[in-house]
Length: 491
Image (cartoon, rainbow, N blue to C red; front, side, top):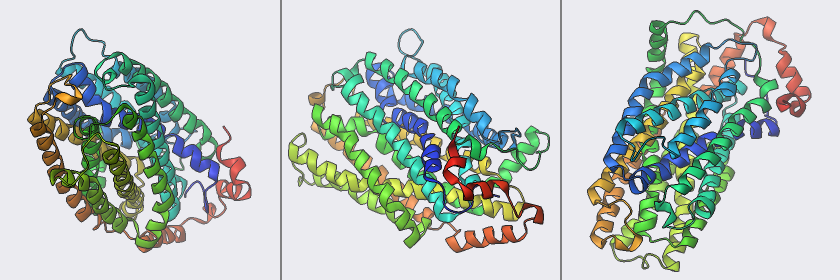
């Protein structure tokens, strides 16, 4: 049974979404600043950074599903998820600080980066997987799940954009300061505090709704049984199709974000003011997403919305680069170039985020399909799979960017005006080719996701019809219906 029946209280939506701020801080850091920091500032070869992150992902591939499985099997008076959300954020904040102030002499080596990346990624999984696994537990309503993800994505983007605003106005306010290490250390310390506040604060605010002992004690844990159940879950047809489309969509997002510093600095030749305005442009696109994603899902459903949005995002992301190559774009660095780019970027980023949120929301419906087939609930396992897909994609996107940068051969510390036109053209061509291939692949598979709204609602109705009579009057449901705001999030 879900914790809440019927419409979700507004304060619960806000409280649940606030936990995603930590993910936004991490995603902004890994996607926008990690590669330039280690490559352009610390002097680590771009391919070394990419290879180190790829190694960290291999370790994640083994450990992340176990974290999700352990979250499903946690049995306490506070439920399955809250203990993780109270314990994991503190060591995560410490490692996040060290990631941006490496405790090593000289330039970090391959294994130094691996150690920091593995620690941050695993501890973030221990926060994000239990948090997002609460979505199908809180509600089984097709649209209300989208609503929770709307708030999660809005909060995550706000967290990431807040860090970007502070970065370009306080920590790294000029192109010159972006090539110095001091501002990155301050960036890391502030981000660490925000990560801990968001995860612990969100958990405390939802405590009264979700802090209930699970109805059944899970069997004893064993590695063999754990991987057997994980493999069974990951073989679910709907999950395989989601993973194919989601992986391409997330890789595209990771590549687009991680190459942003390079293209904004060297292709579009942003001024100091343009760098400061860039987060505001992304913020407008996310607000637009927040307003239109639910109506789009009601009209088209999640699979069609994901596919169409991926294609629209591709057209508006790559359009400026095609025009630039064709000589039909205003000179980079001018006001006309920057304003036109920002206008197209709003549409492109709105569409891309709608595609990603649609894909992520699909995972909630896989939970009921798997339960129908096996009789087991595995929210944590499936969202660890989703989280693994996202992290693999982020790492894959950063690695793609590192390969592109390595091919173009932009030396660490290169000033904005010192990059040759040939290098800029090569950077643009390689980016457009990779982005087009990924967007088309993502749209193809996400559009073929096999669970529709009608199928999901039929599964929920079937489950309710088989509910034991003793569950007919659930005290949680009655309390929420009687006073939803008071019951939902008072710590």
